[in-house]
Length: 439
Image 1 (cartoon, one colour):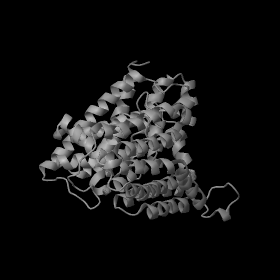
Image 2 (tube, helix red, strand yellow):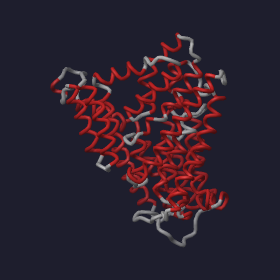
Image 3 (spheres, helix red, strand yellow):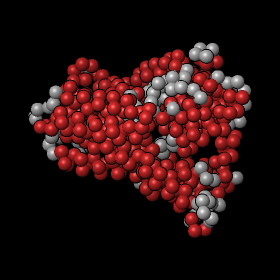
Image 4 (cartoon, one colour):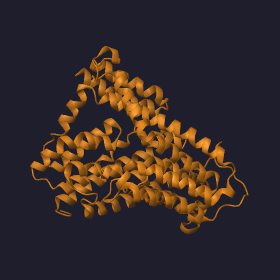
């Protein structure tokens, strides 16, 4: 019982401290300590045998493992975003999009840009880095409250694209290993659900922004924002081509290099941005330096939360929770959705929720005769719901490190669009599959 109290209490405290703006480098280890103490988990590696669970060891394995896997992608993604900003390429693209869509569709432009890159295989973190400069410019021109930028970025990245059929994002690929399906599993239902999430989510985003504007909110310029100047901007095509280069390279090399394809893609984007826009830079060296610093901050914040998940997974209560939610009676699709979603919420990771739940539920449900394509799609969509709680690495990085907002100001929109909308999409998918659609 004490282990369960510690696990739930630590998670709630982490969410609370994150919402209050406490530094994650302090909050995450502190909450991990609470989880460990209540579960009787030894604190140091020296107190246990080799390979046995302990607070410091498990925390640092999670922390350092994330950095090892994502450092280069974060680095190049942040540099790419800064290069696009400093050269004026992001401004050029944003002005062109506004001219085409109209100023009142500024938020839609941000959502579309994120959706295209995400569905093209670009990492969710990288998309946020890359599109943020354009989003700032768009919201500034449209005089929209900047606290909704994280919501627009997240909605375009982690909802109707991340978990849809055909998406090269890892959340759509993990089930393949366990269910022997394809990335296009349940595509008919996936298409319907994606359209629903896109339309409903964008309507909700517009409604929230409109209410804020009606209350007198507008864009507030901050120190560090791109400065207004009269310098000429690159042609919109010169701003779009680097984005397209990232999209194409990541798609071409995704099958052979997996996530390492992003390294080549982002490097290609940086090179393309420099070659096409080199005469427009204020200072290319400074842009690279600022991007590097931003990457380190974002990477550290995310790794701190991942370290907490590494400790949480090692305590007895976590196994109890996993066993309980993977044996929920009723429709296997409902059980699978709840199992993956809850575990994703506990670990703050959609892919983590899948990787933990699928080895347990997949053999059981397949033996029951559950359609593997239906299970694949429900699992994928449901993994993108509770994973976006305030302590999620992507949420923390996007709100605080990339956009410079606070959870108090920005999370309501992010939570509505990335928790509630995907949850409704999961319900719709289960209903459609239950009616025999796509099976």
